[in-house]
Length: 359
Image 1 (cartoon, rainbow, N blue to C red):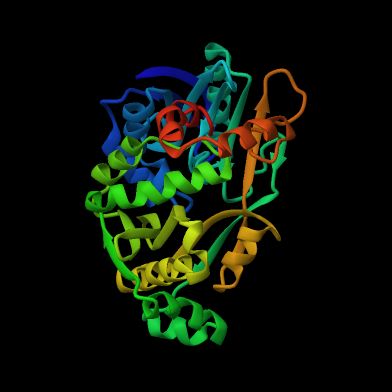
Image 2: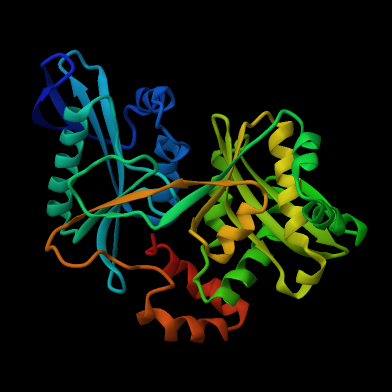
């Protein structure tokens, strides 16, 4: 480990040390701390570091705070993204909705943040982005225009269906009446998922991740990561990849084929995933993040999902405006329009190289 001391911990006036964890050490104690912490998420686990490093080759900085007895008092996973297109910065955690500092107290939190700033300066990063679900009250600028949409689940899916409005129940059932079938699996469904996902991302004008990224996720989390595919004959018309941690099942990626939108395959997809979540004993279904009152927000809201405020904090090396690496930024409008006209095979060839630098 690389060590740096940062004063005293407030809980017992014990010395506090922040270490930069090497890839091959400390995974067990790190993961136990994450799982025991009330704010820990699946994306804080060390296995995601391995997925990101294997898939994208990014430099990672995983910080652990310990007291003078060797007890862990906090952790902070960071990934360094560096490209000529989008600049260089640290994110906790890129590609996902959650990350940030886990700590036992304010002193531990401050020590980890201070160590993150030191790392950022050493790497030449222009900013740090910490993706918190809970308000952390850092003295940093904060973006709070995004929410995650979460639905509390009953023990049985039938209870959930009964609570849905009649129109929603009808839409969920329509796909099966049209002859659609549903399958939940893993790597065996990756080609089905990626075909519809890549087409949808092209239509949105967004570079797509490589198939190997999702393959690594499915191999790394064979019990917690699953694909749900909806088929109509030989066509995959909708698919989603879900990831479970503790009592929550989250859907980070979902797509449907717009050519079949009149048959509502996405409604069957989400209905099937909610049923799967109930059957597997999950208590919460996380629909992912949305901008409040947007189209995706209203889609998720119709299922009964409630918004949970997200807080993304930024350290800015040179001050100035907050970074805007998103499709809503007008500077990317022309690139999006051009991307939407490209053949899907072209986007799946060059898209992964671009997507790896988009947090």
